[in-house]
Amino acid sequence: MKPELVLVGPMMPHVMAALDEDFTVHRLWETADPDALLADVGERVRAIATSGNIGATAALMDALPKAEIISCYGVGVDSIDLAHAAKRGVIVTNTPEVLNDDVANMAIALLLATSRRICVGDRYVRAGKWPQHGEMPLTRGIRGKRVGILGLGRIGKDIAAKASVFGVEILYHGRSPQDDVPHRYYGDLVEMARDSDYLVAICPGGEATRNLVNRQVMDALGPEGVLINVARGTVVDEAELVLALQEGRLGGAGLDVFLEEPQVPEPLLSMDQVVLQPHAASATVETRHAMGDLVVQNLRAHFAGKPALTAVQ
Image (cartoon, rainbow, N blue to C red; front, side):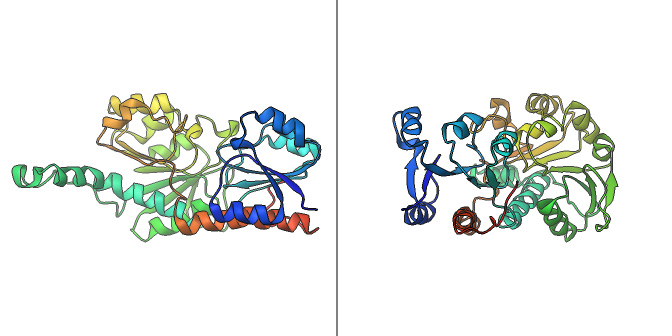
C-alpha cells in the first residue's frame, strides 16, 4: 500500500502528479472541513507536504501522530514549528540551493531598478512624457558604491558575487565573521548600514530576526541609501520603513517581500522611489520546477529508507 500524505496547499501540477503516483494524497485545502478530514485520516498519515508560506503548525502535527516527515517547498521554514517537530521526532526538509541563482538575480534586479529608476522610466515613456518634457532627471550609477549584505549565506554569497561584477564594494553582517570570504565583516548592523549605500536583506525569517532592520538601521542607511529586501517581510519593521520613506530619511527601497502578504502598505504603492514585487524572487519556471522536484525527492528518499536529501533537522 502507498504511504498516506497530507498536502496542505496546491503545488505545481508535475509535483502533485508525482505525489499521486507514490502516495495516497489528502488535499487539505480542497476539503470543506479540514478538521474532519484530519480526524478521519490522521492515524494513517505518515507525511506532510507544505510550502514555506503555509508551513506546518504544532496542531497539524498533533492531528497526524504518525507523521514522520514534513517536506517543505521553499527555503524558509520559519512557518514550521521546528521545535515541536523536533520534540515529535519529525524530519523537516526544505529546498535549498536550487533557488539561489534566481533569488540573487532578483536582488540585483531590484538594486539596478532602484538606482536607475527603471520602473519610473518605463512609466515616463508609456505616459508620453518623453516627447513632451524631454529627458528624465539623471539617475545613479552603482560602480564604486558599497553594498551591505545582511546574511551572507548561500544566496548572500551569490548576491555578493553578482554585485561585484558591477564594481561595488561588498560589506556583510551576520552572527560571526567568515574566514573564507574576502569581504569586510561588521558585527554591528547599524554601523554597516551607516557605511553602505545599499543594504540587501537575505537573512532567515523568524523571531530571531524580526524587525532587525529597524528605525535605527534605516536612519543609518540614510536619505541617499536604498534598502533591498529579498528575505522575509518580518525582517524589516514595515511601519518604520513607510515612515522613513515618507519623511525622506531613507532614499528608496526594492521590496519582494512584505509583512502580511499579499497585502502591501497603501503608501508604498504611490512612491516612485520604491520598486515592488509580489514575492517573486524564486518565481521562474526553472527554479520552481526544481524546487518541486526536490520536495518529491526528499519524500521518496525517506520512504525508501534513505536519509532525506536536504533535511533541516
